[in-house]
Structure formats: C-alpha cells, structure tokens
Length: 326
Image 1: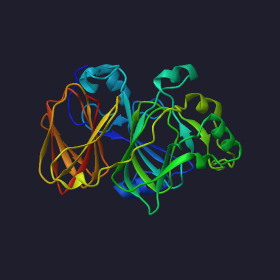
Image 2: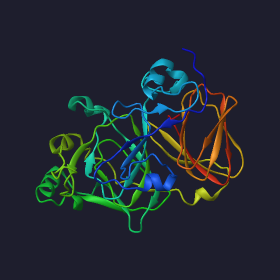
Image 3: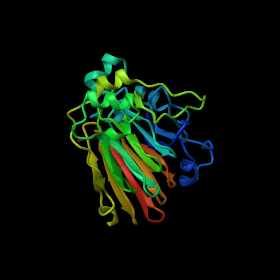
Image 4: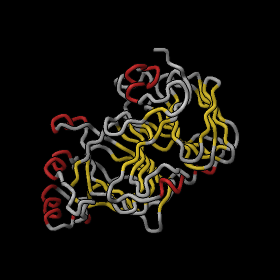
C-alpha cells in the first residue's frame, strides 16, 4: 500500500471512569465528548481504544493498522518495533483523585502478564490547591505500606506535590502515584494499559461496589529504590517566542514546548514520528503541501517520512511536541 504522507488527525477515544469530569469538552470546545469524561485517548494503537484517522486518504484506518502496514515510514527508525506504535497519548480530567496505583517495568511486566508503562504528565490546568501524589516517602518499605493499606492510610505514605499549569513530571514504571482532584493533564506513556491498583480511597464504583484492587501485583512491581520525584516547572521558559524548550526526556519519549507568534518549521526527523498537541491558541500544520487546521486541544501525528512540517499560528499558540528519544 502506498503511504500518502500528511498531518494525521485522529478521532479520540473517550473513557468514562468514576473520577472523571467535564473539562475535556469545555476546555477544548469539543461537542462529541460525553457529559462525564475521565480520559481522551488522543493517539492510541492499543486494542483497548484504537484511534482512527478522520481526514484524507487514510481516513477510517486505525493507528495500529497504519503502523503495521507502514512501519518505520510512520514511526521512525528509532522505534524499538517498527510494526507496533510505541506510545499512547491521553488527556486526563480528574474531577476526583485517581486511585493509588503502579505500573510494571519491562523487567517484571511479562512475568505478571502485563505491559511495561513509564509515563509523564504535563499539567494543562488545575484548580486552586490541586496536587499530585508521586513516590513513597523516605523510609517507607513493604511492611509499612502493607500496614497502611490494611488500616486504610496508604495516602499518607506518598509524597504530595502542589501543581499548577505548566508543571511536568516523569513517572517511571515501578513508582507509586495518584493524580489528585482538580488536575487537567496531558499524558504521554508507553503503549500499555496495565495498571495495578493499590488503594482507591474507599470509593465505590458506578455499580455501587468497591473497584477491584491488585495489591499482590502492585507490591511485586514497586521499585523501592527510586529517588524522590522531581517536579519540572516550565512556566518561566514558556514566555520566549518561537523558541523550543526541552520539557523532559526519558528512554521512551522526549517532549519539547514552543510558544508561537510566527510560522515555524519543524525539522524532519526520520528517526521518529512527531506528535503535536495544541495546548493553547490555534494553528495549522502543513506537511507535503497539505494543510490541517489545529484548533486548541488538537492532537496531530506527523509521520517520520514527512520531509518537514510548517506550523502557522493564527494567534499566539503553545504546542507540545513529542518524539522518540535521540
């Protein structure tokens, strides 16, 4: 199959969990969002929520199918497996706090029948007093955590970090965490839907019953040696115009941010796709002579085979650009 290279826009997959809110629709002017929506899977090749192209000659095809058919031309030469899209991009609206949870690493995922998951969060908006819970406090060991779970005090074992728009943090596999109430987050993660829930704040699910916990699995994958989490404040460097700023890099993804007031050309990177998200303002992206509108809140995938991408802001626009690491 020939591969027509252009800016790929996908239909999001919406997920309704008990802690979700209504900001994904209201913040980005989306009319197709359910009244209560916890997550929007923006770019996903995972079987639990496949994104499908909405425009152009590839319309209707899933991201998984595109990757399988076009391999490195889509994902880039640096992808660990050119036939499997390596990342998953989400919007998360936490009206209530999420469960205390942990994801496996490559070293232990297969043993438990799951997939490894390292992720990062970029806070897009937060209500006053909003916070995240990341990492166990110094000195907390397996016995301490087990006792806290038995006495329903697990939240006290976690570091709590106040957050505001522009904050970012890396959550490696093996790190215990929970998103706090009031956070609207853009998440980049490995292509995985494996989550082990340690504690759910004694909350009941939509069926009136407690949601399942996975304590044995969670305790088996926690990395007790991880250092204290580091919050990345990106607000200060975000005032410069048309200057790329590194947000963070991990072994699985690299994110940069730019504030645009004039046209910017994104240099071709044959080693990686380029995933754009418009976090504020509006813009358009031109690839191989084809222009796609990028309203606020739009996710867009630029194939690795593209010769380049020209981004034109229609007002001041802020974009997040994620690629595979160098």
